[in-house]
View 1 (cartoon, rainbow, N blue to C red):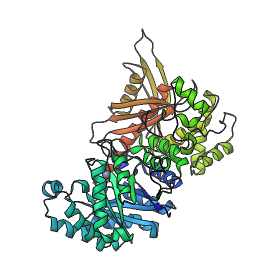
View 2 (view 1 turned 120 degrees about the vertical axis):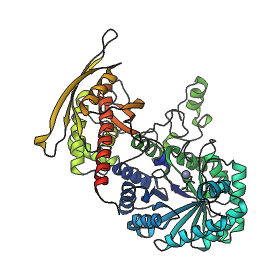
View 3 (view 1 turned 120 degrees about the horizontal axis):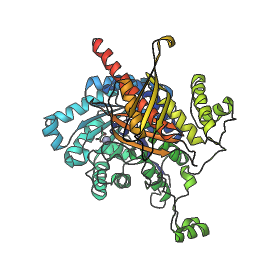
View 4 (view 1 turned 135 degrees about the horizontal axis):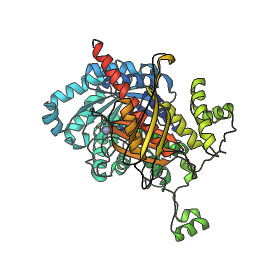
Length: 526
Ligand code: KIV
Ligand code: ZN
């Protein structure tokens, strides 16, 4: 039997990044895109180019650099959006895709758009036709598709396919669908539009997880005729997230008896690495019991289970953890390892670094190597991530000292360097503060020095690698009184230092965003 290919469309960098606090800078997005290419997804939705200059540049750069997958940019059915997306995906050549969307459900038509059905069809068709002037590969999404009247949805699908859409995606935008009903809807569309049967156009699904059914709905849709699934690494995305890539891929592979006629091209061995990278890059921790990629996904605590596993792994394990990339460890580096060894390990881990990057990471590696016996690959990855999440370092940590105890008022002294235009006008400033604990005192001292006042809305620390001397990685979210929360990350063997570094990372992001805003206000907008 000839297997049918299920196209894996990854939207971690677009829908995933819409998750509050998950925004990534250009370098972070590029690292994620490189990893998605290693994971061998078929399509990377790299962003929504009209939304900001940063999003446009990220899509363009990914289209220019990433080889292999198709690169998609999202656009509303508005000429300016479509042209911006077309410009952004242009460097990908034939691998460029424009994804246009327009809401079709009654509630969206009446309350959001104020448009009748005929007007929606006209705009959808015009949008697809305009996108086709840029690329041959055009996807159309009737937003809130799962709540759209089926007869109207069929009309929309037929019209956009006739206008040149090669993929029609049926989003369950608000996570309303249940598997039987969603599968039935996809089956109906498949039967009604001849191009879906002939393979000239593909049905895609895009399910949100508000009821925890995103993966189940996507799989039901595949059985009913869908040939593309949209998903994200770790299931991140708007609200409760999107269908999780790792769960979908492993469900199809592990239950190949049930999904016999389908195959996908994802390299499952890259799943754990992708999950960790995305988690660190966007600052969203993966819950311990998350299927496939959570720390506990293959941990067996009960004696009966452990005994069974030792006798025959399959008694309690339906997947081999190695098949998704768990348990791959290399010999750790030590403080005696030289720059060449560190550079080689970075290459082995898949990071594309310039000489200057390697130099910066090597000097942090040396600091850490002096404090801990072994530097594991996870430690090194945390250093790389710390380096690439750096924004212009207006403020950097020179020195800190804390005194704390159960009968002392926690006090911190912090010395910071403020970058100048040249090295000579950089200044070093020092101040002290008391606080509710050593971390609080340190962050308050940083606030005094940088003239900011951040309120932490989220703070977490986790050990990056094993052992008591493990690197601690702090991820925090701070509210500086602006519209958007700012995230910060920092790692060190000392948890106070990791906290100070993470907070400074957030302060630097905040300062550089304000500078950017100011310069935008000065520049006349087109
Ligand atoms: O959830 C949704 O409807 C979307 C569309 C833009 C595809 O993300
Ligand atoms: Zn979505």
